Image 1 (cartoon, rainbow, N blue to C red):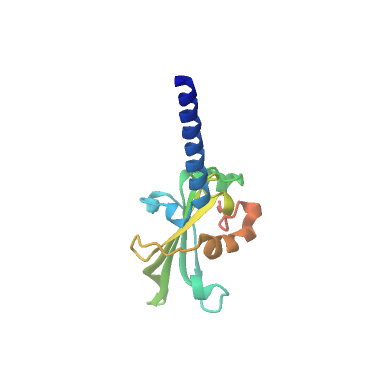
Image 2: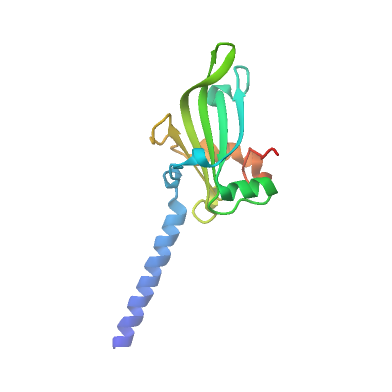
Length: 166
């Protein structure tokens, strides 16, 4: 009798664990991507400025700085697929003109890509989030339509637009 009830309890526990894991994997969202504390100490990969007239200016006009953590940097340099734990940061700032120079203005958004193949399986293994200005207020409400649909054009590069320049 004891064995009969023990087996039933074990089966229920295993089913609960599988259901919990499956539910987590399926329900992952942008909110699963953490704010990248200390990203300014990571490797600065590149910068660029999108000016009026560029097709993406309305959404992404300004100064772009791209940072990569060590895992992402290694893959970026080698051209290998990005391993889980890779994080890439897109720091978007207003571009202002002052004294015949283009200078950084206020931060518009801090975009983050985080690789976790299991958690973000439905979006190529990447999770996305954006943080408003200098805050930790999340701005991505639907990472599939707001991020993945554009990044899918870079599928052959593991969904990453940036590359490392030697």
